[in-house]
Length: 285
Image (cartoon, rainbow, N blue to C red; front, side, top):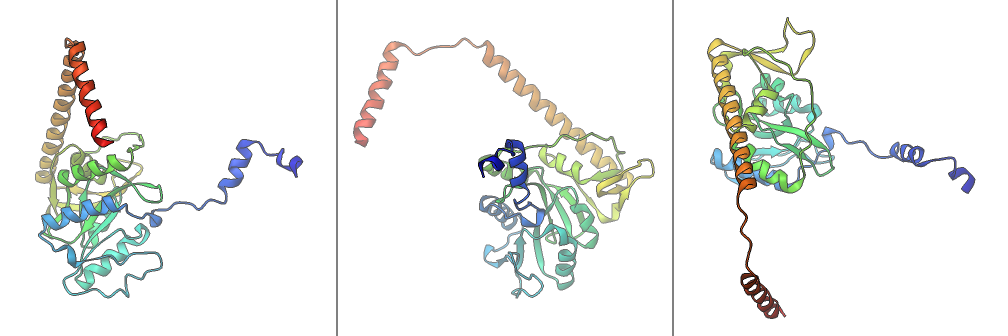
């Protein structure tokens, strides 16, 4: 037996073991309670909803189509991303209110079925360890709004996310699309840079590719009228200026801190603190 084991070096053994590990998919992402609570609180505050009306029909082995939905309920849950369009169409057809976790870069494509998209830039680390760029689909409030960036929810989730895990951002080649095109990535970027922007169905048409670009637009996008495109350009400019101002302020603060004359505590002051700490230790004992 020992001779057989010697045939495997560490790399070979790791590869052998890896074959038997379950693979993570977007359908196996269980929302951390801290993230869910943050989203729930925001939704209930913004649309003045009672948390007691919330239902969660998605769990392993569950059947959302056979679930008994009380009158006036709100579905606030993390559904299987692979059948998200089917789920949205089901709720829209039944007139059931929903606010669903959704893949951030592809959920724009589901808005053609009657949902509105709400974008944040914070990537979530789910309970199974998978990290997914997540935003939301819903049918609350003004139904004429197709999509919006949401700085407020982004900021709340960022605070939560920092407590749970460090975000790992994948670097991808950047493309310069025309101002008339808005994508999920751009809406996420605006949310992450504290800038609000939304557009209406009457000002947009959905597309999956541009004639002048050989590849497809990942997750699809919307072509905007000149008015909506101008509003988007203004939002991008404001976000860029805000980012530049933040960088300048950070650089200034760092320079001031580096050049500041450092004042040290005197031996007398250190002795006072030592006595204070000693007295607290005695109180604890």
